[in-house]
Picture 1 (cartoon, helix red, strand yellow):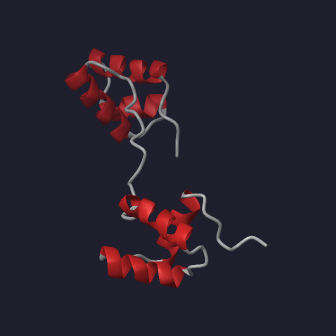
Picture 2 (cartoon, one colour; picture 1 turned 30 degrees about the vertical axis):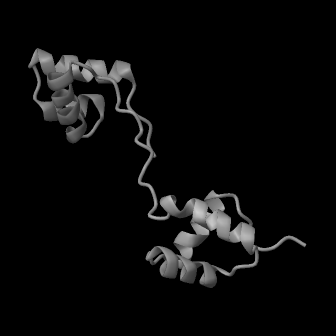
Length: 118
């Protein structure tokens, strides 16, 4: 994920737009940013009077997030469930269909091992 532009560069872009000496496309070329970047910064400045970058939202939550505790409980009761069996439990008891990869990512997120340790 690319880093946000520095506050200094954002301020210079907004100041150039406010001066109205150059077109937005010329400002984008001058500061070596995309035209959409200039447009978005100028709109943000007009609506909020701020050039601060927006905070990272953290991405989307998986559909399995509400069922993490169920997975932990089932695996605490019987630690040798296969992924296929866990998917069947989710389907039967919680009416949610998930892929093999989604279940694998959820188990990894919970810190549960893939295989039983010897």
